Amino acid sequence: MARRILSFLFLGLVVFAFMQCARRGTPSGGPKDITPAELISATPANRSINFKSKTIKLEFNEYIKLKDIQKQLIVSPPLKYQPDITPQGSASKYIEIKIKDTLKENTTYTFNFGQSIEDNNEGNPSSFLSYVFSTGDYIDSLSISGVVNDAFKQKVDEFISVMLYKVDSTYTDSIVYKEPPYYITNTLDSTNIFSLKNLKEGTYALFALKDEGNNNMFDQGIDKIAFLDHFINVPTDSIYVLDLFKEVSDFSVSVPSYAAKNKILFGYKGDGSDIRIERQSYLPDSVKTKVTKEVDKDTLNYWISPFKADSLIFNVISDRQKTRDTFIVKSRKLAVDSLKFNAVANKKISLENQFWVSANIPIKAIDTSKIKIVDKDTIPVSVPISLDTVKNRLNFDMVVPLENQYSITLLPEAVTDFFNAVNDTIQYRVSFVDPTENSLLTVTLSGKVTYPVIVQLVDESGKLIREQFATEPKSLVYKNVKPGKCQIRVIEDTNGNQKWDTGSYLNKRFAERVSYSPSIELRANWEETFNFQIVR
Image 1 (cartoon, helix red, strand yellow):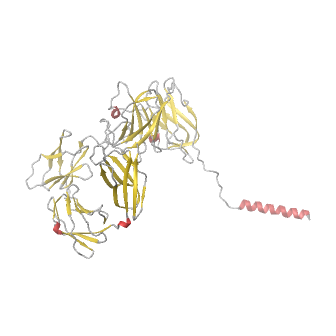
Image 2: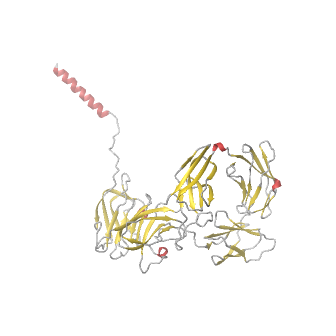
Image 3: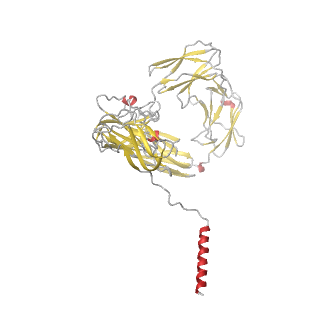
């Protein structure tokens, strides 16, 4: 009997084991690898002195791959020639670096790899791995640190170069345009904090660049720059703050060209507020010309009625810049720009955001008797209409009952353009925003405010919603603001010209100071009062 019981038990165990083996499942594979590859050896050794090698070999404890090495690798002081780094595009436990430069004597070099070295399996970066050596008898060990901000935007760009130039008998203010720095680092894509390490004792000029040209020098036309108004002495315990700005480019005129048979574009850079265009070529009296400024663009439009000629000769003159450029503009087979209109995109208007109609060709005249406005009951409505010659548009000052809908009709010949073309019948329908759908925001400023100021209401992306100019403390009311998140941007308008002015490195002028408030949540049919305390 006992033997039979043992046989049954044995049989049960066999069946159970078989079922366990046959049961389907997915192996867990263990926890995810989050550990980056480690550098286990270097030849020559990391932090070597009296360095003379042309090749560096780095060995890791697992297979690695290189990612964005040309962008992430920062060598300080900069090398004239980019070193060859292999292998690229394949996994390996080794990196080989071949130096093509002649290294400076008694100099400490730092190779900062940023986040370019990742383990092959999970892509974990070996963050801020660096290799250091000295061509002299010791490793320089001094350092400085600080923060890079944007002078206008709330968020600073990624990959900002921070640079030190030695201040000695050869130093001039123009060196940043002509030569790479003595030391360099980069904020990469992770933070706006910087640290320059392995520095010699001495006096330096500190800069930051958004180096679009990737040449370690300042290109005014494309780069942003930040600088201090004083030199720094290393060693130091100071924390430095650098504010990046894009300069107004030095004045220059682009080669003009026909954009249409009746329009020639004259583009320029810099301050073109006083430039004028003079035509040298003879034209019959029947040919009409007019110059207008393109809104929000550094471009002049030279309007000219069609005529037969192979080319025209122009002088472009700026008395302020003391320049005079001569251009030959050859004619092209192009169509004539015809009169077109554009109305405000949002047909829901308010007293703060009125209705307007713009034209693509300069408006010469309007006939308000041929502009008809009626309400929803087709009752005629009288509305003041004005011509804005700067923005080339018709403004409608609609102080009327808000609850109504309106039809606006431009009858034929209501608008006449520069070439005497007129409009056909155009009709628009508009209605007023219901105030209960929007918010009312009242803003006051406190703290360290320097008047005059421009107080702007911006959305989360920094796009301007509304602005007011204030020369003294007062409450600023913004009506009919769409619900959602917004911020207050305060510009200290130092020169009172009611716009933000950037800086100038050579003139040692910083950009006008800009402050951003915390986020404000606006709700429909709600009045919000917000005090923005300005701090330094």
